[in-house]
Image (cartoon, rainbow, N blue to C red):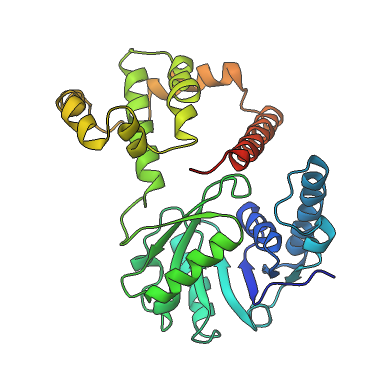
Amino acid sequence: MASPAAGLVVIVGSGLIGRSWAMLFASGGFKVKLYDIEQQQITNALENIRKEMKLLEQLGALKGTLSAEQQLSLITGCSNIQEAVEGAMHIQECVPENLEVKKKIFAQLDGIVGDDVVLSSSTSCLLPSRLFSGLAHVKQCVVAHPVNPPYYVPLVELVPHPETAPVMVDRTHALMQKIGQSPVRLLREIDGFALNRLQYAVISEAWRLVQDGIMSPNDLDLVMSDGLGLRYAFMGPLETMHLNAEGMRSYCDRYGEGMKRVLKTFGPIPEFSGATVEKIHQAICAKVPDDPEHLTARRQWRDTCLRRLARLKSQMPYQ
């Protein structure tokens, strides 16, 4: 039997994100209880986790220092929420992205937890002020938004409610680091958080470039995959600016006016509908047909690439 780290982590919801969180926490040596409303869903999730961990071990890509069997011994299922949360120090909610469904779960948790457990949501877009409003334990609530697929992409956005106690954010930050994730703090909530605001800015301009007939969809994707994306895999846009001149001040002095000129030419927010949708859809489907077989194969290829990139990054000397 593996020696667990201190404390119990509870995962609420056994879908893709919930299973990924369970694997991550087990990789850090934590005991994990996977809660769902139906026992069959839990059974299926545990079997899926077993297969995935065994495959990762065969590929030499299993996270943590424990073997697959040791990690699997730390994960159990439970279909009774009150029983599941007993003794928990961190609860990670992973139910579907629906405000009312999530609020119902947190209302249940609010009535059965103590004053020391962190109540965390995996939401990608719901503001903490809406999600946690009215809870007695609101000071213990925080959003910990992972990036799909969480096992291969380590970023976690931590977004507090206006009343969240700083110590709860600190605890969540430390926990994410302990399981090998890369937590970032938003000092206050904002719609879209940070990742989706950056992502939507890129998507919006990509869409306009195709819509306005400037580029083909495939060439547009190459701008990211064979251009910006390569260096952004190792450093962010601000450090890139710093290195592309003699520091940030130099970059802004040199390129500031040009950036403002180009930014003024950006068009309105796209509708993401109509003829442009069909144009992009047909172009991408020529490369990856949208049937389940091709989509699954392409996702597996993506995950393999991410796994190899993560290994490369781990081998690079940190500077």
